[in-house]
Image 1 (cartoon, rainbow, N blue to C red):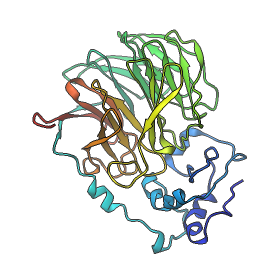
Image 2 (image 1 turned 90 degrees about the vertical axis):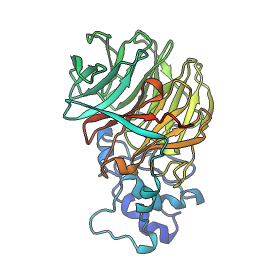
Image 3 (image 1 turned 180 degrees about the horizontal axis):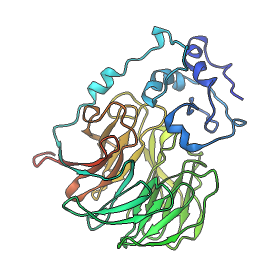
Image 4 (image 1 turned 60 degrees about the vertical axis):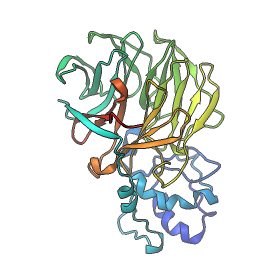
Length: 367
């Protein structure tokens, strides 16, 4: 059931066409409208989700949603026009997201995958990529060192402190050693699970499940310890729900529907968050951004977004620093940019459209 009675008439002209087509909804919210349209390509991986608990509440904060829908990759159903008064041209926003002169693209690493899905780096600087039911290790020269075949398509990849690789398949995690041998497969998180991120930490492995909108906690041996219990449920309207483990045993969780990044201690307590909804480059726009986050060695962050594909840098306290790679460097329909921290402050970006890893580095004289 979708209750749109509280939406003002003018706004409903824009919102109702989407609401009539809802099928892959999200959980109830107390502030703002958040949903994933049934026909959205990003929603197809979530499968069927019950509509019985789907509710919408209108608030002043959600008034801007019709303006942000375009950034989320949403379009009205065929035959449903949107009055010009409620259209929002995001061309100016794309043009404003110009990459900083403090960063440059140093190189590209071609991938042999037809459909690359994820990348990761090890503590020793090794680079890994996942896709086409396989994981590959890539040498400094860009050539493939080894390839490990998987029975399913990987959607996430993480590297542990000992060099073990953790691949997020749809319902469970597969573990591969540093030599490329499959060593174990963990318990399934259920038929409705969609694993979108795996973040190995000091003594636990954090696993994001966009299907249940929960973060599972495992020990390095694969024993399920439980789930994070956030003060409010995570909001993940599309299959982008990312994590980054910190060196202190905690984890940073992207809460995409709330347009922010949250920190949880090793004990599972939320200790803070940063990020804000904004159409300015310093904030996050659309239904659900950022889609990926990477924690750098110096404690700073890199984030990737969809809608307006761009990669940005933030300080350890969440202060906006720079646009590392603006939308002008990506194809207009680019989706699913993944990130990994490289050596000497480099940012590795998975460009799925070009099927390569793009390496961005800070210029020598940049602050």
